[in-house]
Amino acid sequence: MRHLLLPLILAACAPAGDTDVIDEDADGSPADVDCDDADPDIHPGADEVCDGVDQDCDGQIDEEALDAQESWADADGDGFGAGDGVTSCEPPLGYVADDTDCDDTNAEVHPGADELCDPLDRDCDGSPTDGALDTRTVYVDADGDGSPGTEGGAECALPPDGSWEPLDCDDADPDVHPGAEEICDLVDQDCDGGLGFPIVVGVHEASVQEAVDAAWDGDSVCIPDGVWDPFTLTSRRITVVGGPGHEIDVRGGPVRILGGAVTVEGLTVADVTTQGLLVRGGEHTLRDLHVSGGDIGSGEQVGAVRIESAVVEVAGLKIDRVAVGNEQAGTLFEASLSDVVLRDLDVSKVTVNVSVRPGALIHGTRSTVEGERWRVEGVSAADLLWGIAGFDASTARISDYQVRDTSGGISGRLVFASDSDITLEDALLAGGRGDAFGGAVNLNSGTLDVTRLRIVDNDVLTTEWFYLVHDVRDASLQNVIVAGNTAPRWMFHVDGGDTQHLELSNATLLDHDTQIVAHYGGTSVLTNVLSRQYSEPVWGIRGDGGLTSTIRYSIMPNAILRSYYLFEYVEDLEVTFESTSEPLAEDWDLHPIAGSPTEDAGDPEILDPDGTRSDIGAYGGPGAAGW
Figure 1: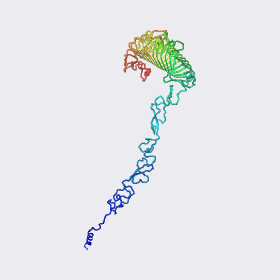
Figure 2 (figure 1 turned 90 degrees about the vertical axis):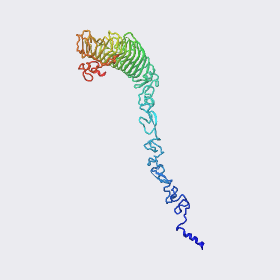
Figure 3 (figure 1 turned 60 degrees about the vertical axis):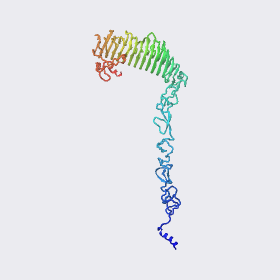
């Protein structure tokens, strides 16, 4: 009985309700709470993972799984999402594991898409056109002529001054581009695929003569730079154009234009011995002509340029390094029975070698000549030369005419004329040296009208017969400066009875002690004249018709007046000049200073350009506006 009682006692001493705990997978969770006591990774509080199993025994599967992934809605179905993401083990339907779509409404827009030239940023890199597949090559202007011709980069949009097509056929030459003027140089200047001329010597025809013979009326003939044989154009209406160096270089001449209507551009005639260019009949335009070198000998109708019975416009004529051995007039340029416009004449380095008295180098006979911008320099004459420019029975109007640095015996260094009507505007004679008879302008008969004339810095060795203006018949000169000259006997010479008349207004005369006007008859009126150091302003010998000289509103200090002249004279006024810088009178500033007695002291009937009463001297009167 004692052995049976002990287990009963022990059982009676155990705590009430104490039973054995069962945890088969030893995960710390009893089987009664472990929803899978055979798997230690499954128990309450376990980390949920995406495996379709309820690891934390909460009755939910894969919620808040450690390896769950975020996904975003892919509204356009291009494999790239956007917007707010969701976290799940499997992306919901229509969701993707990417949020880089910059436009989830357009399936063509997403990272890695092909970029095109449109406003869309298709590959979502922040640049709408970077790396676009449909860019085009842009052509840029490399030579700055406004026409693109050089490949630039590949672009979607056309940059300023760019072009999708190459427009310039030579983008290294700014003179070559569409719209450029074609010149005769065997280059396609305007990029039209041609040379710009229907006939090009050396391309279409072998010689100049063959080319002009082949030309139809209206054609242009291109004669490239080179040396060519003389040629003749007869009754043609064509244009003959020289190369870019203006070198239709014809050796020995002559080139003849006989009738028709011809335009010649860029002709050089070199080594002339008889004729350089002969124009006879017709109406013509000559541009950029050059006569260079040669010794023009004796004979009839010789000369560098000779125009007969024609209407001609010359724009640009250069004559240089020519020796003259012919006594006839017009050895350099002759217009006979013609109407001529001669602009931009340049004569230099011409020597006259004949011992007899040759005629004027530039000459008109029974012609009308209009000249602009004439420049003559460095003409030397062995003996007396009857004028740089001379006219017989002609009408000539020349503006901006300058003769410089002539030497030898030259009468009429500006103009020598007979029975002609001469108009000069803005004329200059400077630097003349040597003997002379007749002076700057010699007018045997006709009329002379001069506005703004400067005769300065001339040194004439023979004093007996030098005049600044000689043998005037009917002359009007205004705004005249005479300064820095040596050895003139008289300034102005009036000859030939009552019909001869000189009017001189607004002149500044600064030379040595000599007469202003010498009379062998006729009349003179001097108005608004400023001079200095003349003992006797007017000297005369009574001719059959007598003589009268009137001096009005003028300043002539220390002048001696003769009682047999009629004078209206202002005397004993001080003359002050702003500057008398040596050595060239051409550089002197002869404007009177403020307060000078010349100011507003001239003829009240003559007005200055500002409308006030005229000043005395060359800078007064209406013609002063052109100085």
